[in-house]
Image 1 (tube, rainbow, N blue to C red):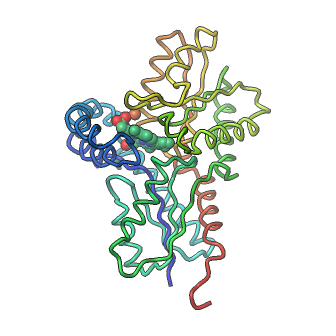
Image 2 (cartoon, rainbow, N blue to C red):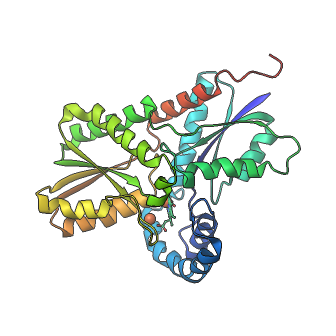
Image 3 (cartoon, rainbow, N blue to C red):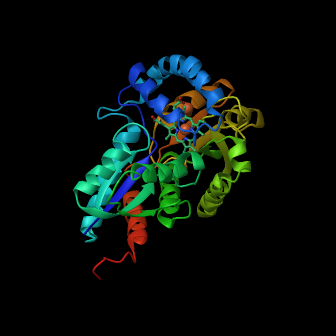
Amino acid sequence: MNTGVVLINLGTPASPDAGAIRAYLSEFLSDPRVVEIPPALWKPILNLAVLPLRPSKLVPKYRQIWMEEGSPLLVYGRRLAQGVQAQLDHEQVPATVVLAMRYGEPSMQQAFAQLRDAGCERILVVPLYPQFAASTTATIFERTLALHREARDVPELRFVKRFHQLPGYLDTLAQNVREYWREHGKPQQLLLSFHGLPKRSVELGDPYLKDCTATAEALQLRLAAEEVSIDIAFQSRFGRAEWLGPATLSVLQAYPGDNIRHVDVLCPGFVADCLETLEEISIECARAFSQAGGEQFRYIPCLNDHPDWIRAMAGLVRQHLAGWPQPDA
Ligand SMILES: C=CC1=C(C)c2cc3[nH]c(cc4nc(cc5[nH]c(cc1n2)c(C)c5CCC(=O)O)C(CCC(=O)O)=C4C)c(C)c3C=C
Ligand SMILES: [Fe+2]
Ligand SMILES: [Fe+2]
């Protein structure tokens, strides 16, 4: 009997064109786990304002970050899946590793079909989000079950909830920062920028804010000897509701007024670089910081396909596969 592992990230448009971006946003923003406004109110806003207007604004942004092989989120996701497969093969852990996206392609449906065709009767589902939010991780759990709703022969399933305390994740992030500083020198300030969430999600019980705070504290401990001040902020606000704060953009705009003019930004909530890091942080936020009087803005890349991160992810998979008995054992 074979074992499958599916690594799942958010998803990204198939091309940096308005049509593909619209199709992606339509699927993403129609998920009631992502936008928790009653559908009768949200559908008209989505169809009459967001989908007609937002894609054309995003075209130049996606074009700026697009890589030769495709969207960075997908490119790094593929490299991670291939790397984890190679690492597990090397460790003689028998498992088939595939990549899927919650929205767009490669779809979760395709991934589960591929694993079923490979004879996998046990599947480990690994959302690529270190911190748990209902709008990211829970929707993957739900979609997994929904995709098997009609099936007659359902595989055994295990789910990874989060991995913000995984030593390999934290150590590789801290090591990346240390190496960056050794090579380029230290900043006055390190800003940890996490993807934001509506405040209401946390009030309703999402552990996301606690997970982000715990991640920041763990990184702070690992970087204490560097003696660089560390702040935490939340980026990528969407819509009119109140989101977690402080907002990354406002924090950066306020720094020069406090005489902080050399800043490094790290985005520990994203394991792969994407629009939100390469465009929103590295371009938009960098520009705003400079306009506010900042002098040096540096963005430290995500874990992407770092060999230590690939090994850490393979280790996480190994841990979660442990003790899963073969039916004939
Ligand atoms: C209600 C809206 C949104 C919530 C809640 C949200 C949470 C959330 N998102 C990520 C990770 C990513 N988001 C990305 C893009 C993106 N996110 C939203 C909206 C919400 N996100 C939108 C509308 C978009 C598309 C771009 C835009 O219009 O600004 C991406 C990048 C995709 C890419 O193609 O590169 C990622 C990754 C997390 C981790 C999270 C909650 C914790
Ligand atoms: Fe998002
Ligand atoms: Fe954004």
